[in-house]
Every structure is written in C-alpha cells, then in structure tokens.
Length: 59
Image (cartoon, rainbow, N blue to C red):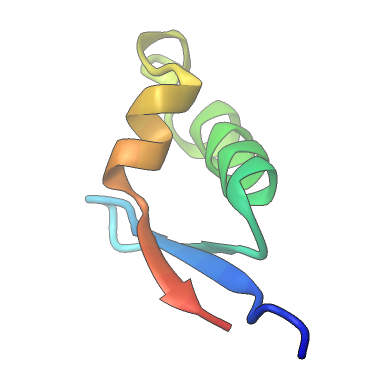
C-alpha cells in the first residue's frame, strides 16, 4: 500500500492561502509569494521558517 501524500498549507497574514504538495513545493511557493507580494520581507525568511509556519495535511 502506498504511503499517503502529505501536502502543506500556509496562510499568509495578507490573506493568501499557499499550498504545496511537499516540503520543497511549499517552500518554493512561499518564497515566490514573498518575492512577488512582500519583496521587502523576502530576505527575512529561511526554509526552516516556512516549514515552521506551514501546516501538514494528508493529501
């Protein structure tokens, strides 16, 4: 039996809901969002920060 895929959800304080299929995906999505919508904050976060804010949800 295959392991269930784990997805991630991250709610940005600006109201945007970001989703990703895995750790790499949510980190890439969050950094893209930061660069586009919050460029002044993009350099203040690291991968561990994003993962700490993201909520794991079984896919």
